[in-house]
Length: 222
Image (cartoon, rainbow, N blue to C red):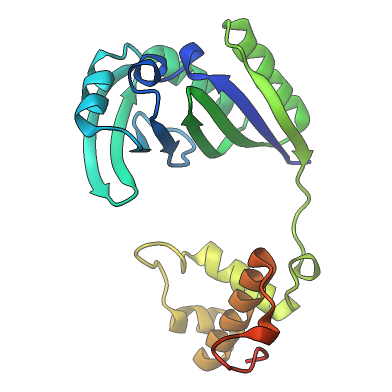
């Protein structure tokens, strides 16, 4: 059964230890990837010039380049040293898929999905053998979601999963709403309404919003 594992790892034992030492206020977040030579990384809460100087001096960074700047921070492409990419390879070789990775105050928090608990244990042992002070802070089995568990009707669940699989939520979209409706053998309008109701259910559940006090005055059943 699929397992979600969360690890805490000091940056000083892995990536960007020197950078965090130079700019302790730094907050960074890696864009999820399965495997890559470069990693997209959002960096914030730090002076830009100081950050560039720290990255240039960090032995775990082979190369770096600024991709874009937004209000939330800077997105960099980071080419890590062989030592760091070998650590990532240990995760992928065990069937792990990184769901999230972020760091602040010099500590990485990494969440990974594995095919089974044994895979997570194997990664822990192999990284520990490399003198990395790794800690497992969470380990839980992930059961496949059902429509009922999500608060959705079977039709809404089918529409959402079909849209996700077909790339409707990608940027740019890989399939139009009309094409998706044809695949599901329903009308464009029916699919639009089905998705809208599913969105509302998921957002309401996630944010714990009481729709009875909906400031828009609309009918929550729409």
